[in-house]
Every structure is written in structure tokens, then in C-alpha cells.
Length: 140
Image (cartoon, rainbow, N blue to C red):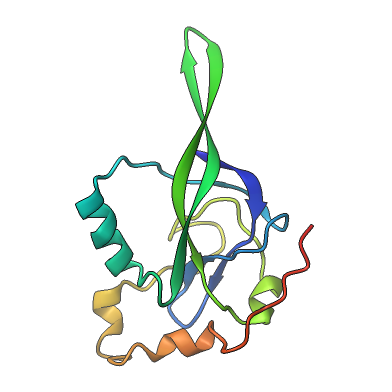
């Protein structure tokens, strides 16, 4: 699936975490995986993504492309996407990527949560990316 709108997707913090920033028109149309989940699973994902404390879940337009008999068809759907809330403005200065893989060309391998617990038991890495004031995004 690919987002219809362009968004900045950046890698930041000591743990090389991918963050999707709510700043419409900057960045790329973002490629990602699409899953169908029930309300119980959506609630679990909200907990996992710390919504609404750190991330904001919003419904956005996406396009699915399928190929059948050498014919491509596109289908537009709405999907839930998690955006980092109240991020530091300097995150918008980082390189934007169109899709994320921990082992991508960027060379910034993601550090899983279980490896972070000993180094950052209080989850203070959030301070590296969040700010108290709302960022003004100069869209487009």
C-alpha cells in the first residue's frame, strides 16, 4: 500500500526508530504493509504505539496496486496510520525515506525494544524526538 498524500518519514533517536511526521506535502508517498484488524487488535496496536500519548492515529487515503494478467489495477482505500505527535522541528531536517527497512541503505539499523530496556529503562529516548510546543509545519 502507498499513501496518496506525501509525508516525511525519518529515522531518529539513539535507537534508529522510524517516525512518520504529520507534515502533509513534505517527503514522499509512503509505502508500507496493510493489515485488516478487528477492534481488539486495533486497541492492542494503540497501546503498542502509545496512542494517543506519543503517536496520533488518523485515517488516511492509501492506494493498493494489484497485478493480474500483466494488468495493473489501483484501488483507493482508507487506512489507519500512526504519526508522531509534537515532534522536534529538527526532525524535518533529516533525510526523508519512502519506505522503511531496518537493514536499508541508510545504514541505521533499528534497535528493538527488548535491547533498549537495560540502557533506557524509563524510555527517555522520547525526549530526543518530542517537544512540548506544537511544531508549525510549513506544508507543501
